[in-house]
Length: 288
Ligand code: PDD
Image 1 (tube, helix red, strand yellow):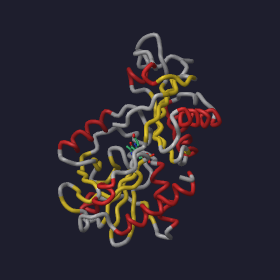
Image 2: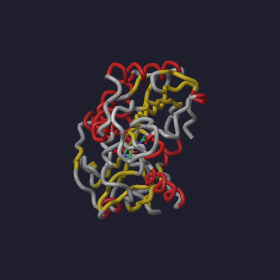
Image 3: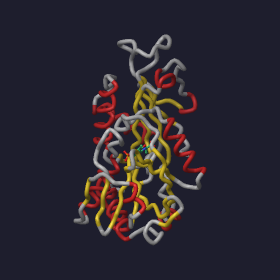
């Protein structure tokens, strides 16, 4: 559990996390009517904050919610949350909902100020055991909606899928739709076969992952290629390496898929190189 640190941000103020209150009539609570971001910070500095803010703006635009802060105000908010919680390696969660109305109607009222909430937690370094041995994943049919490109706070399907993965003894669900790889339940996916690294292209079936950009840049820094292409289920079972990437898990090797070893069942050589390049990139960009 990512335990929330003592100071959070709510609607313009930094307040004690355990004293922060919103109304149960908030549309985020009633309808899941909002978007969120999770931003990793290393040595107190957010990694790729601009990309996260761009994705947040795109999500708000898709929902027809006016962006409640300028870029400078968002940056200030992040700096405040990080600074007031002691800096270091933190995860920062930010949520914007359409706000609190006087009742419940599917159709939103005009002019309601959005709710803005942020909190932070200590970002644990990736589990050394998982780094050494990789993680287990299972493939599950993607039961989510058709706008997975929006980072919606309505995460019920992801919760159900993650519970199902856990029930099958796995750490993550790799989701497939129509016989093709969509993404992880909370991660993007890379597949290696015969030395070729591939990941599916941007689409409404998956989130435009920021860590995917970071992994792509790490791959480029190694002068390796990355193919953006659809990946069939059969390509997953034949893969030499499978990696998952997200803001909270960096890039991690999947070494068992559906109970079978991936490649030789240990984190692969390309993962090792890309993971090391990822650490260097973090160092370069965040000085951590
Ligand atoms: N989730 N796809 C889904 C469905 C996700 O939920 C996430 C991340 C990703 C990776 O995106 P990014 O690289 O921008 O973190 C892909 C976050 C970490 C979460 O919900 O906690």
